[in-house]
Image: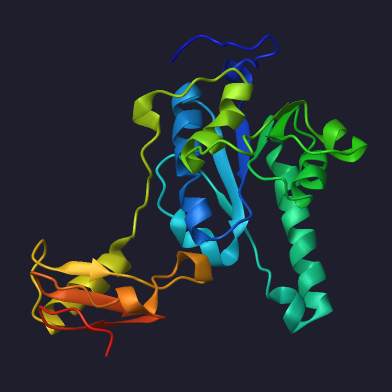
Length: 245
């Protein structure tokens, strides 16, 4: 790794525990996985924890650099106020007990500011945003490009660059470990549908965001291999000709 390029770089040799917060959707959480890799490489002695929404936890559950993955259950408030308050209290106690030296907050979510204060961490970094409360919640802040196209992985790693850590190219690969149960389920589906690894195509044209969805007119390309179409929560198999039927 390159030497620090900022005057107020932190000493990673003194970081015993770090917390990385990414309160976003599944893909956003996966794109934050290189931050954990780079942190662990810079401070191999340190414990690196994560904090994500409960439903996105599988994106990082098997990451080799993560010691503990904390979660926030957003549905608890819908069940009952008591369940939500109890969950919040448990989270606060747990984070406080970990005695973090560093908090890396990867979004401008306001919750990250008071969680950073709650942990009592010596160092905290987050994207820049206006307001006295935000500015005084973090020791380091960085600007994100607004008009320049920039890959999300690089934007996430900018948080570490602001601290004086320049990740190597080898740190930038995404890390996703499906786990034994998911692999067994995938193997069973292949057998059930007569598919062989490496000899079929997976097509997932849908998304929770409409601007990411394929237009209906573009969902009928001709394919040269058996194609696995996914729609909603479950997959369906078509023949060698793709169809949406």
